[in-house]
Image 1 (cartoon, one colour):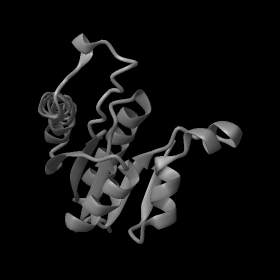
Image 2: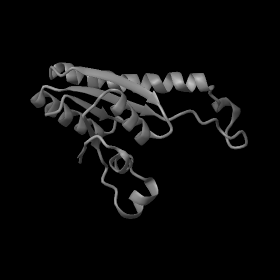
Image 3: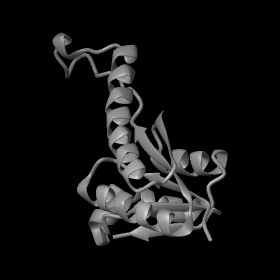
Image 4: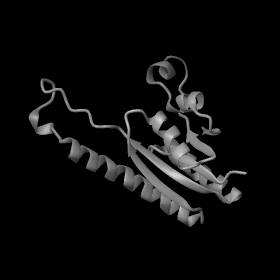
Length: 147
């Protein structure tokens, strides 16, 4: 049924559960996965509010963020290998995770996006926003929401 599944992960416990469930689905369908981690883009601190000692250059920030994302996806790749599921890992820097998720799914030729949702409702959902909701609203690729 599915051949290539995009699995965005942020390293949270719920996201980890979604990774495990996506690997089971991939194994059952003979599919591969594309594990994705989106790191926020660099935002320089406002000089008046942050001590000079806390400054990082954009290059230092991006290097550290990509290392964090890479480590997280190394763990996903190990789980995929243990399940005999082919896995490609992608770390990207982006200020808009939902747009990056859709773009990577399209660019990688994925036929399903399998992602977690924290299930925030009401005011919390309105104020915090939902990357999952934005993907559902704007994506033409099927999305399976795991909670």
